Picture: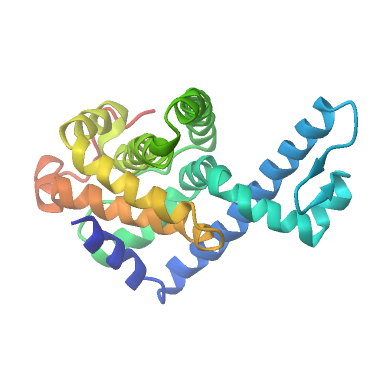
Length: 247
């Protein structure tokens, strides 16, 4: 079950190789979160003809507020929404390192696979960010129409998108793009539930900093559980990966 996959990821924290990726991931997550928050403040500042005053924060003065404690509180609050796309970006960039660490410990018999190129990862990240932006803009209208159902809509929609992205990135290493999509369709329900369970802690400030890397490890376990390492070795006895590995 997905909880077992998450517990395996959590149990690997003492592993030096995994811990290194975790701290790099947390640093990258913080950097992206600050960048997203700075971009949001810039948009607010650019759109307003007069200085903007925010509740509990006061007047937004851009750089001054970005570095102030009040602004830090606002950033933590907004991280509930900003962390969904940030988590996707971090997963795309660090998945290979996370998966290598997980497979070295739990699936050592598997043959190595080529690393995803930087540009392929960047392309997929921006494509998914665009999808997330459009989906959440549409969701705003649903929040206004059905306010009591807003949390359900938020977690259901973002859980579906997150699960799809996490699994696609994890499976594509060994199955290729087409193979990963085929697996995703076959296991859509399990992946959706796993995505929702990842979206829940992403909406908790500070805790959400750890989720992208742990989520990548969890979905690596999920992929191997759904496919079975023995079956995959039998499919590719020569050590090569799926013929559609090229992205």
